[in-house]
Image (cartoon, rainbow over all chains, first blue to last red):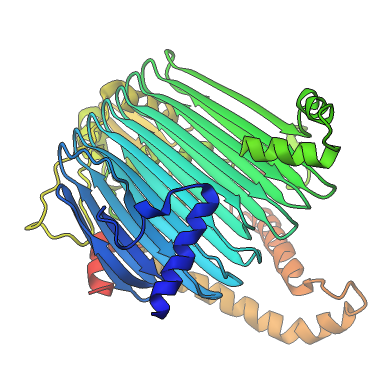
Length: 316
Length: 215
């Protein structure tokens, strides 16, 4: 009974992102791997998916194989929830999507009561040829700045495949977070990586390294990083794109809003070209909200604070 | 390139020898602002892997291409349940670009038709051997520090309460040590004597580590 209410609390935090939790409830028939702290509570496979998890001392190891040609409409749900206030969770997922597959993976990391809780992940995603792979990761760390979150992911995207990464941490407080995602893109692949994060007070520190290495001919990528730091929060976005193969194209776009004294934003767009036919660009803007947008909202009766909050909310 | 370690199996430390201190130094750290330590070329896993495989033996261009390809396997799903099919291969032009880069940084050099690394990467056995000397030197330092610690702490108790005076002294000792060694001719008399080198962090492959530790 206790477990059920724990799961519900974790799942309910998805609603903060306007996601339909009916897709993720235990009764839903879609593929899923659900954790309650370091215990595996649900493993559910469907045709075309092999899903296996093993509990370890402070977490789990998980394998997910999406077999060749599998096309899934329902997302594969990974729920790494912890209801405890303190503890350590270490996750080692390895995901292999074989050729011609099409899936969405919804990873949901919810730590609603975190006071001194550490979540670490070391994950690998291998995407084959002609695939569509969407990886959504939404986080909710409660309201007490008590989480330390450090995921590291290596992603390999095969020939002619599309990979989309959506990382959102915009609800609740963050605590300390340090994310690294390195994506290796092969011939004719397309990478679309989106990161959104919101530091709300002086206990929030967000540092993101999102790197794309264009390793195959005609590979293309875009990294979009959006963040806001208010109330003394800190955000650092490190976007790397490296063109190492012929006719590759990449762009890093970083927008960060800083509000209130003591808040800090940093952006380090790092672009490199090691082939004479690639085209890599970057664009970054940091600081106060756009004055034209601010004036337009203030002209409609909002005060400066309300208008700024609305602009940040809209961006994230 | 085999994706089979817990984290990265090797790390690279230090930097290339640089010239006398010049205005392009970043004065807060006394390091050049335009070169990271270790150099940025290590950011890319493919280039790191090329260096690691070349540390085993010099290889031709074709052999490097062959050795960097890899076939990812699951961690706990058995071979009976699933046979890995995906292979990641790099084309010639991309590997050429990586090698140009590594050559420019002086990290590899071409000797006739084979590429070889231009700086040391110590394996586990060599590191264990070196450790004996490291312990010997450290024990002597500890002896001196134990003898002088009380005197030092008494002398500097008037400083800011959080002053890590022993840490500061140890850092200054390292600077002084290099200076003295250069004067005595025990190391070459060059500025910024910090070389690039690599070390093998672990030998156990990630897959083996998983099956051994988490049955």
